[in-house]
Length: 316
Image 1: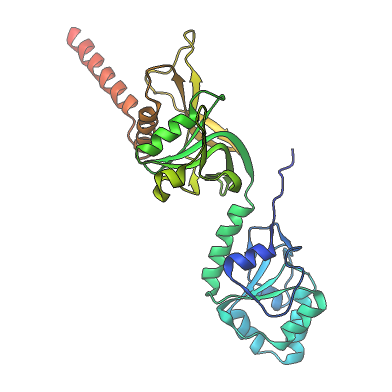
Image 2 (image 1 turned 60 degrees about the horizontal axis):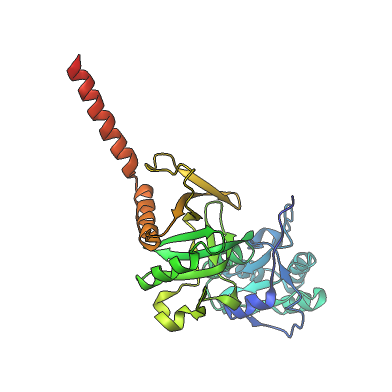
């Protein structure tokens, strides 16, 4: 199955990074960026176009301008014409450098926008790549709740009515933060990182059966919500099944695969009398301990085995 390709319009990038157009371009909204990598076209300006990716945004700074400045106007136009002929999405000039007249000529000729940034080249490129990695990341939607507990992003899943939203609300009351309720958009921003957020239209809202829709930010303040959070643990809530054997030790690590990434996961049975908010808090702290190299279940197991070995040795 082919992975869906996402895009972001050049107009959105211009607004996000406050870029300035050197000419009037009326097609910025129609130019779609589909590649998260960007390119500094120094090699291409010298005439080398092997493996050149025309889907990438091109960024130039002091180095490229110094090279172009050393050319005659005729040679400069020739080199720029060869570059712009590939019709890449746009050329961004960093450091607010003054654009060469030949750049304007080829920009008009091939209808490739030239944009100006006041940032340094490396700063602009790092910010743009981070932005594109999020905007163009593979994504999926989960029916659940995402909360931040002690710095850990906890994705709570389960059937409707099992208590996901109520647990999230109790966690907010205990000082933790809500990221998303009901619909969680999860994006794979790197080979090891998943980031979750709520759709814009329902951000910071939560549904509690019997009460209705609540605005968490207005009820509990801006410190009770967060826009995005890395997904570090998945907790599956399910109604208690008397016939099912639940893990009581935690020796075996379990994982849930999301977008090709294995995320540590727990299954928590739900029944009257269990304080789910406290259980989620403890799960978050225990997950942090495991990442720091300490596993309470394994430590206890080693102690028990040690005592058993001592007993066997004493009986010999």
